[in-house]
Image (cartoon, rainbow, N blue to C red; front, side, top):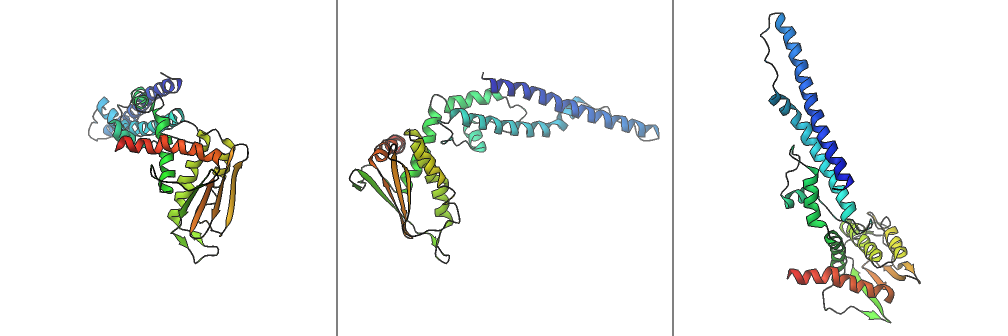
Amino acid sequence: MNHFIYCMEQYWASYKDLMLQQARERLELNHRYKVELAMGGEAAPVEPSSENAARIAQDAIEAGAGWLIQELLAHAVSVFSPNPVTPLDLDFQEVADRLGYRVRSASFQPADLWRALEAKYGDGIGHSLAYQKRAESIGKYFSLSEGSEVPTKNGCMHLTRSIHYVEKSYSPPRLGHSESETLSLQVLPALASFATWAGMPGLAGNIASLVPHFGYPAGVKSRETFNLGSVHEGRIKLVTYQTSFEWTFEPAVAEPLTLFLGEFYFAPLQAAA
């Protein structure tokens, strides 16, 4: 058991004991109050039971379980992700459903849930899933399919994304909300993840710096050029038009990108077919 889970186990046991103790104290306080009232002619109160204490404590215990499960999943993301740029996506309810685990339950045991997460995402499985999601974002954005011919010139890969959702009533025209979110929240982070995987931290940083620029509302200037990366690592050039975005990947970037997509996008598609 790792140190994080050990500490959570200890905390969880103490937390449940504390909630039960507080519930018993509340019941005892209410009991004494009713005893005092009974001395003035009221009906004699019923002695509080352990069952009542457990019932009163249940809401607090379930809330604590929900919070701790969230903490545990956040820890799982840090452990099972390949790097901070490529976090594994773990949805609270989805994970609970897939693992058949009861959330917000007094029967929650951190070590049990952790073992289930290790079985599902350990041994590099989480790394592959995180990269597959990023590769899928890139592949779908550029409408890539295995075996299709990608335009190249002088070893450079040229990819064009048609832009259909532009709000032209603004000056400069704005990317539509959906188009902007796809680019800033999915594609650019995915390309940064690829660059990190390929050992190009400078390029990854340059790509990540574009995220705020294309966040909604993002103006689109025709023929605006963004040069990303360096001669040492390899470069990507993005030229924006009001009807399309044109991407050029130098050979030093295009070659590992082809490998990345082959391993994490096309191969999983073949396996699922």
